[in-house]
Amino acid sequence: MRRFIRAVSGFPLNGRSGLWTPTIQDTSFSDAESQVYSVQFGAYTKIGNRVFITGKVGISNLGSLTTSNVAYIAGLPFNSNSASNTQGSVSFGAAESLSITGGQVVTGEVLLGVSHIRLGLWDFSEGTTAFLVSELSVNGTLTFSGQYIT
Image (cartoon, rainbow, N blue to C red; front, side, top):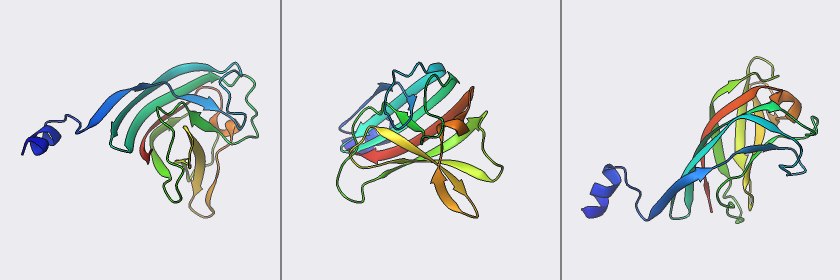
């Protein structure tokens, strides 16, 4: 009964919560490319081996990010599990100032053994393709939530 009460009242069971700082990276996986941000916020709750994340990241200057590379949201609070078939998923509730075509939806996946989200585009006629740094564009903002296994 005590566990049920704690779960209903909003207190994590055997868990912890905290903040993290999302960044935008290309395939160099570096934060040292002179990126400038308009907003960086991330929060997480970890219960057992499951991490629930939420965040918002906006970039006002891409710096020297390679625009032809896949874009990543980096800085997740924990590395993901490296076991087969344990990828995490990320949903985007809002996106602003992107250079994408109408009918495309931003997607995200936490791959195996990493601390970043690989961004993609869901195109209803072609399936999922890579989301490139050039498609984020200056003043691009992404609001997201998701989960992954550690």
